[in-house]
Image (cartoon, rainbow, N blue to C red; front, side):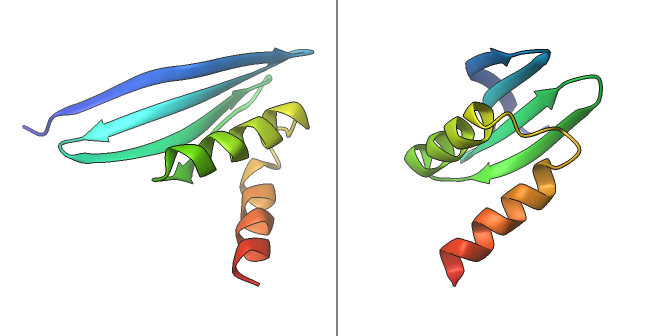
Length: 83
């Protein structure tokens, strides 16, 4: 069985939304995600680098991105980085 664990690194509450910054470890692989709960929920991977992932989390939470638009906004952020 694989070793898997998750740790909540940060939690922000904005209006009626909760934003969780989560670290996931699967064996020796480590990556970071965001979970949004605001009536609906969404969970997306932010990346493997802690600093970049934390920065993305802060931007998303501070701008109160909805769970409905999370994937779309992250896709736009990634496209800007690679443009």
